[in-house]
Amino acid sequence: MTKTNWSKRTTLVHGGTRRSQYGEVSEAIFLTQGFVYDTAEAAEARFKDLGDDEFIYARYGNPTVRMFENRLSQIVGYEDGFACTSGMAAVTGALTALLKAGDHVVAARALFGSCLYVLEDVLARFGVRVTLVDGTDNSAWTEAITEDTALVFLESVSNPTLEVIDLAHVVKVAHSKGALVVVDDAMATPIYSYSARLGADLCVISTTKHVDGQGRMLGGMICGSKDLIRGPIEAYMKHTGGAMNPFTAWVQLKSLDSLDLRVRAQAATALEIAQALEGHPKLAGVRYPGLSSHPQHAVAMAQAESGGTVISFDVAGGKETCFRMLNALEVFTISNNFADSKSIVTHPATTTHQRLPQEQKDILGISDGTVRLSAGLEDPADLIGDLMQALDRI
Ligand SMILES: *Cc1c(COP(=O)(O)O)cnc(C)c1O
Image (cartoon, rainbow, N blue to C red; front, side, top):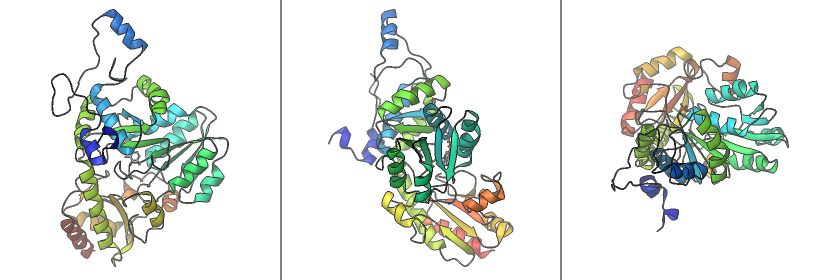
């Protein structure tokens, strides 16, 4: 067994470890902004040609952050990664590092609100042209991506309506026109991510979600080839100041030890809940990529090993009935986050997606009865029992 063929679970515990001269068991945290040099010549040499295990300033890189970058990018299937202050710093960094005025971008319409803002407001201000398509319609991608297109951006599984995109098709069309593919994999999870296998050039992960998984700190990672990461991505990130701080990297590095166990347990619970809710008389519908009733179930299961940790469903009867059900829950927490060890319910129409105009909500399938449910680490029987008692009360 060599480091290159370690399985994900082994890599999650040992991958990318850098031990100091003290031989510590747990990964060390290097809370330092800068680094010292024995001589002026050594400083000059390091600035001239920075080695793989050498650092000069924490905005450029740090040993604890580098361990986190190496370990997470390895398990997602990429050569390298750059860790950022948040998932949005990673999305913005990846896009801004690669695009220039006049470029054309094609993106899926069902995007996380902040990603939509970056594309439609920020990048548009700098002269980037954006075309939004229905991500589930393969022919829409084929039509929209042209010789002019520089980059394609999508969420492999959309939030909150869990649309699944046929990534192999999008990558094939994009690469045939010379466009790069950037995938936001927050929902797909680093464990089940198929972006690398299907040829996405960059995979962006909000480590705030499953990697932290315990509601503590924001983080993000851009994963890709060494050429892209240590080329345009690192250049942009290190000079614009979005690098992750070492304390966050250390906490989230330790979180990787248990990531595989947590995500698999949460996904198994999500499937159990989706099966228990499907067909419930008080619900107008249940969406989960792992259910055969999901419109893109076949694509979802061909791409990924699992339907993931998030479900959405529609309570029949509108907002008031839906709120009554949410307020009757005793184990579930009402919050706007997901992927936490605590099971969470969200009402997207009045919170995360409140500002979207009604017609946009209609296109995305977000109604007043829509609930996004994130499965945590509690006993699935308690969670299903809690949902059933809350539904009984409406
Ligand atoms: C949460 C999320 C982000 C942003 O991540 P932060 O860490 O909150 O900045 C981006 N994309 C998707 C799909 C997300 O769910």
